[in-house]
Image (cartoon, rainbow, N blue to C red; front, side):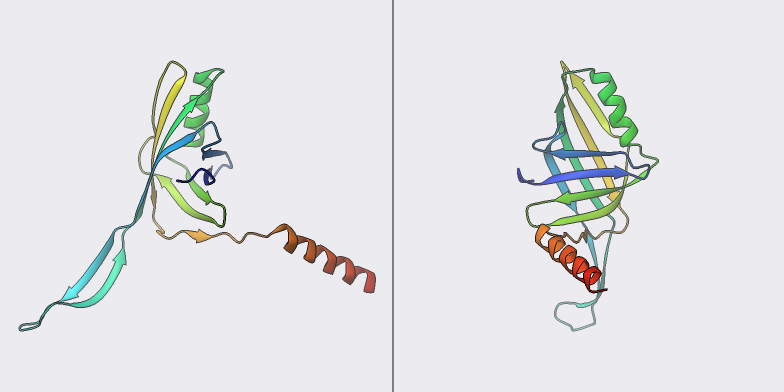
Length: 158
């Protein structure tokens, strides 16, 4: 993960948290794997195989973070457990310099939280049953200004 990228996780209750180089939760390891199953046929005397079809398994996303809290670390960890509740579904957004995409996820297991001396680690293991990232359309400031000018022009004409 690059320094100008970030993740934002939002659970179905609306609680969200940012994970990036400049947030309290700093991402140190990110693994995004999508296994593919190939179905093939082989006939007698045939060289190689014939690809019949392929399918994708569920996407596995693992994010390891570190954090350092100046205030009450217990309250911060309770907040992490409230946000990363394994019973709740959520949306993981991956935002970069030129892109914004999201995927619907659920925690595969209870998040692992370890701490000592004001520093802690958080290990998240997500599973996405719909395995593909979806692009989020990003409206630029210039595009919004054009839309606003057209709207004002329509109002002045009417």
